[in-house]
Image (cartoon, rainbow, N blue to C red; front, side, top):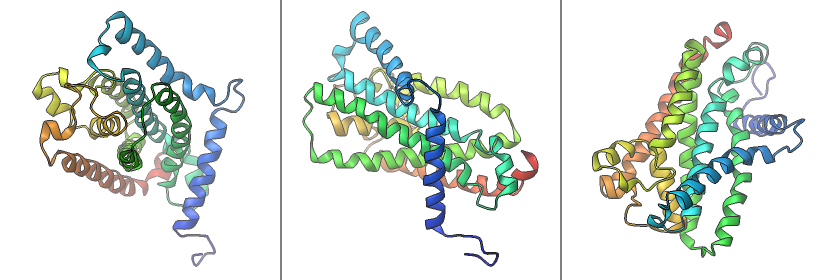
Length: 271
């Protein structure tokens, strides 16, 4: 406790995040007849439409091995990233009254919003498990790398989310910009096509987005190479490409925390 009798410390704040995140996850589906199943509806709807178009109508899936899992992994990772940022972006404005009434670090507000998305994502991985079992993909020790990639994705999501949450307090147009950017990201990140089919200059631009590196590495960990056009960041930027991508994640994360802390002094009077 501090001098005023308030509880502090990392352990206390982690418990706050766990409790608040759990409450937000439950509140999100409270009163819905299908409850949690709605969290699967959006990614599975995207998956169903894209699978129908590319696997049957255009018949381009023969360019990618295990196209079903390839596509589903891309969609679930994409929605985890987008939903995390989208939940964090308005969180400070929506919970401004809490900041004025309670004494705790403002950063816990957007972080707690992201926890509910994490719970949803890990529950949604059951869909991937079903398809992996159906396609008889053999587990391999390299799958142990997956948690590291998910941590990298979460750190990147938090960095972007904190940046946008801080800016949104000042500039409400940030919400509209993110809506457009997230839609463009879906088409620019090779979620439903192998990145190798685009020109080399476009590959270099695309891999400047760490999300693409994380998604491709996760696919390669589970499926191996899915075809000659299924490239990783090291294929495009060389042996140091992955470290370059991780450096971008670290830079975004540090920038997000720095900007959020600087702007948090004025949150109570602006929201």
